Length: 347
Image: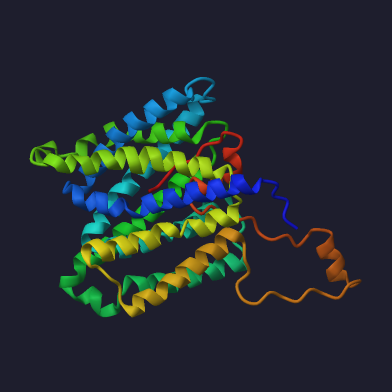
């Protein structure tokens, strides 16, 4: 039986907020491509305009008072920020060499890296079910990537393969940011996001090429939009929704992001995926939901007859389902947000 006592109106508002945030996430690739700037320049100015917008928002809401930051928490947030900003850079690079659709779907394998990193770094239990879902996701990834052994011998496909590698590396960096910032508690996520984008300015300064920005003209509007819309507004909507929604609904709504990205890529740039690639998408979606919601892989075993030792053991609570894994860095802090905990954000 559900123990969720949220009012229906509150959950509906959270659903609308998260849906809006995911739709905005899906338009991210258009803003990146239309800006005409190099990926590192895009990330640099996203950090600049994002810092200004988030800083003003935090100031207006009074978040700088009783912020709960300590040197250790600040350091962890900053370390997560290193992975966040380079995650953006590699994702935006992959847009150019693959497509927004392929890069976004491949990038959405992040939860599986979180599972693996948790097992490697923190000795989290890697159950048979999780391992099975990882296998399903890998098959889906191979199909979506549309790569065969002959592609590795074709020099004309080298850029595409590099792009796939960049999307996977971006997902890995996002997972590192997740496991790091999950360990920061008692700080508003808006402040953590602010620390991370602020850190991105000096971090990416050596990689920015300002000479290329002189002829940008009206395209500056796309970069400002990335900072104000896709950093400040999107984060505010997400963090607000996480306080109102149960984890399963967050896990499901998170897939609006890649769906909208693929639709935008097709509508604006005419990019579509093949039938074989399309077959891999539901595998990744199913596997991600399976991991995030702690579902078994395969048919559920029938309950043992009442009165048997197995039934008594289950009734005693020794066969509990595995805890859900984070859908994203922010989503992983669904309950922590209510305690003003912090999280990083990848998109």
